[in-house]
Image 1: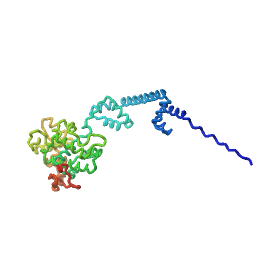
Image 2: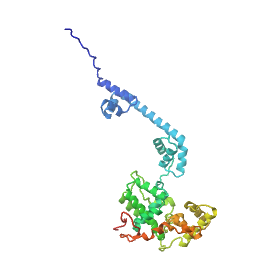
Image 3: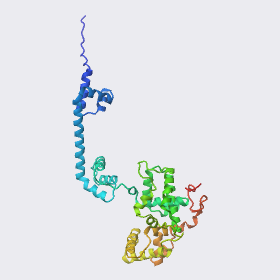
Length: 387
């Protein structure tokens, strides 16, 4: 019987430890990371570093130095290219009061090809002085909402969601919701906050002598913000904003109060003494609507702001647009009053009740703080209960 001999190919020899270590050093010199090399050989990053240091010696160290220098040069070149393309725009935005993050966002929207991470790091290390004031975090409407909210908290007002739904500016509502959603406020928290803002605006319209001092504002804020946990998860200044933020928008505390229909806070000022009389509020809106009719323009809220500034500059002092809106409860009601007084409202329109008149008989009394409140869905809530 013939016996067939079978031959097999010899298995490849495994690399020696010295060959393995040399291969690690070579890969490191070529630019691979310690993690990547260790992963292929089943050892830790620290073990690869030890081998490179022991076997590679000065050659590996010099290679690492050159690699870092190359990386720094590439980063520097990229930053210089970024500044050449966008530096002038960034400086202009900074000069206009924009923060660094706002500037990066502006650039990213208009130049989608831009590297946002490179923009952030380059502008952070640049000599451009961006605005870092806290008031830049919040819009003017959101700042005003914070003041209304704390006035409502000070008075212990129950939420008034019916009035809020019918009368609060939609832009303010959406902006505030966006701010609170960045923090820890729940949907029910947000609904309650807006309801209290509505209650405060309604109370101020009915009681224009209402005021609050800057120190009391900050005391309430310091109590409420930590207790309710509305700090931003992203480290931004929590809402409501500080008194300094409010004053950053208006320069003076009393200017903020009067702009929002509140009485100026002055030592020794008799309660109930307000800057504008009821007759002047009515005269202001009637004069404005009359002037707009003569000019063939629609009497919008923005137009009133421009008209009021022009009248005040001419020496005829009139209430601000926010004060007018607070006095009449909303801008539409103000226009209805003026058009009714001037006879420019049709008979059919005059028969239509205003939003406030429709719900005038639906008021109730808050059982906690005794302030007048409107019926609400989830019961009454009073921040000052138990004080």
